[in-house]
Length: 203
Image (cartoon, rainbow, N blue to C red; front, side, top):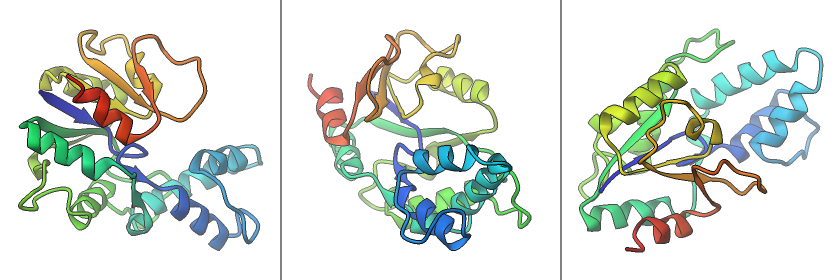
């Protein structure tokens, strides 16, 4: 089986580090807690909020990525892939540099470093190889990559990916989400990685 996984907000969870940096920058009150999506919506509701959000994103995805966490269950899922002899790759829409980032931190290098630090690539027992990580500049380029890899399964946190006109219809589509329906018909919403593991390896 050939399995593809998105990176941002699918393997890596930024909720706590986004909240911490937003507090440091005075974008939210001291003691504010919330998910990354809550913070995004909060900032975008204010004048100049979109630029503040973009600057925050570039900083967290780059210099502060070390404060991000791996979602519970990802390691166990990858171990199951390794045990089953499944090919695993990461396919992510990630530009090289963040918007509103004066330091021009390479976000792709930062992501690869985080994956190495988490022991998910290039370790003796890792299911992932560094050559199986694909970062694409645009969403259409991401879909093209998915097509070229001939994947059996793809896991992503964004429903928009599965709704793209050229997304392969034969590919099993798993939406990693805790949001309430409705969800697109062409993907199966699953809230935890433990349940994703059961879904993918049920047969």
